[in-house]
Image 1 (tube, each protein chain N blue to C red):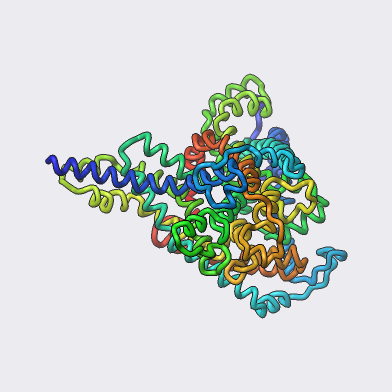
Image 2 (cartoon, rainbow over the protein chains, first blue to last red):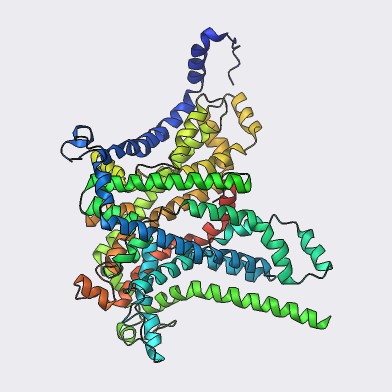
Length: 315
Length: 291
């Protein structure tokens, strides 16, 4: 450390001393330079890029020289049936995911917590977490090999025992069920991690005391374990509701096919279709911006509710 | 008393069976794919293959190796993931270290700039237009640069750095060491577990990445493995006759070849999984952001 005496000066020289301290720590600023440039270029420039939604964007003119059109693009997207359809599907798939997919990790975590045999518990966790790391492309590939109507493994089996084949991927209602099922398959095990972490915080003496009092396993689960993870459940539920308008791209895009687009087309895939495949940049940016704003409103409301219910925000 | 003990054992057994079923449900699809990849096409078409290979052979794996585009894609992806992981770690570490220094002027401003990007983004089209204007479309770099710092991992590694005892750094500075030397000789050697963990997370995320490649890459020579697999196994080659008719596809890729390709896409993940698993729980706890 440089030990040269540094005189502390009054207000008049604040900017000079700031400059001095920057000079003294130049190595730190040098380290920060490239990463900060990264954030500005790759994160903040696209944020400014949303002005495309208010311009009649023309590739040859560029963002700056394209003429302003105000809210014209928004007026247009609200008149598009496909846009309404995408919003409906996004909500529908997210809500079904929440209703069906949300309780399963909780149940799994409660069961895992009751396992007494150490190696069995560890082995089970290893296997249950694994699907989370398998990409949606692979999951989708497995799904077509397992669930295809004519040659998939599951339908081969159904045919063999004399049942009719089920159109898992090619009929809208079955597709929704497949979509939900594959989501559970990939994420349910991984979803237990936060609950199991919360469970390690529960005082062991509570269980011992309850056992002495003669409380059954089920009663202990109900009166000790469940209340122990209740804050986690509430927070995750609120976060999930906050993300109701946002939907990942890979899962619906990879699992969908031309026969089920009525239910599989969601906002993220629709933006891709309109923006990249049809090159209607203004319209696609407007849809994306609309989603971001509604998403932000949802998230802020979720945070507000969380503060009311839990005395802490979701961040 | 005896009946109570039996009762407890019965419940334990019951729970083990339930978890066992859940575990089997996780594994069965993967076992089925392995069995398909090792079976003859005739046996697959006859619907004989479930969890054990029938007429066992390695023809499908050989076919993948003879499929020039597939091999090219695998080699390219390994190369791209390696470059990505190295750059991402360098960027993340060099951002995290200065941000642990409280005497750094503007530290809070920098942190705010970084954290805000976790909540706002321009969206798909502005991102795409930026890549286009930077002439990055259809290059290796479009898969490397845009994701080269994850704000979330940056926070994790910063938290880890701040937990290193300050005395170690102070004494190094007393000896006249520069920040670069402290970073390389003191901080990094003490952070190897978190460096290893986040490298794995970056690598796995990049290996599994699909959407950006779909949008930014049209040149087939630069198809990363996920895009290649998608083109080969799912889109255009779906094995559901109804879907194939809807897409006007006539000649399907053999089932065993698809299964073997899926295996190639999954194998690297399975190889690193033991290490991933060892660290991810502690990684998540370290982040301790509730979600």
